[in-house]
Image 1 (cartoon, rainbow over the protein chains, first blue to last red):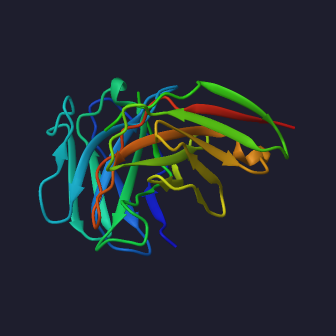
Image 2: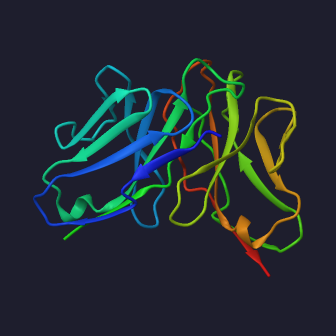
Image 3: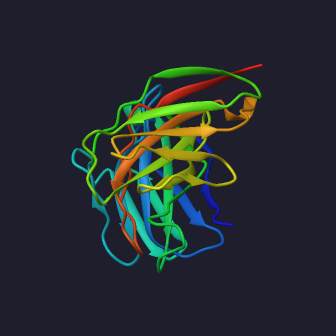
Length: 119
Length: 113
């Protein structure tokens, strides 16, 4: 159990276009989801925390108007990269935390990631 | 969250035990030690976590020193599929919720055939 999916797994787009990435918790409800970004040969960096039904909280240095996050249901969060540029090319990974507490303290389950390439 | 220090890379022979160290000398009393791993081009995978007692699950064992300033993740019989970057993360546990994780550079474990 505790599977998180992301769609698409890979996307290539032209500079200036917008790209939407979906993150779904398949077999559990997640009040909180997280979005991370990983550049080549670097570690994951937390971008934002997404809470169902409320505005996302962004980490310092992450532009909220560029990276739009919507968490409209307990199983779906979306990240939209608006007006994408080549420097936004990265590996975007989401994680989800089960609602209501679990047997494992502060558990998070990660999606498989989305590789974004902006030409 | 407390800072952690891990060796950048380690090699281990297939079938042997892989012992990955982590130093967290500034850990606070309410902070847990978590281990995740990331296989190339995949999302991170939770391995194990502990507070002060040693822990074991189907994937690994976690040994935490008595002063809690360091820990060791043990993969008892490493396979080629265990080749990955292993992250040691120290953080306060949040019951019924979660905080975003701060990943360091981790240890790149390479299992040799």
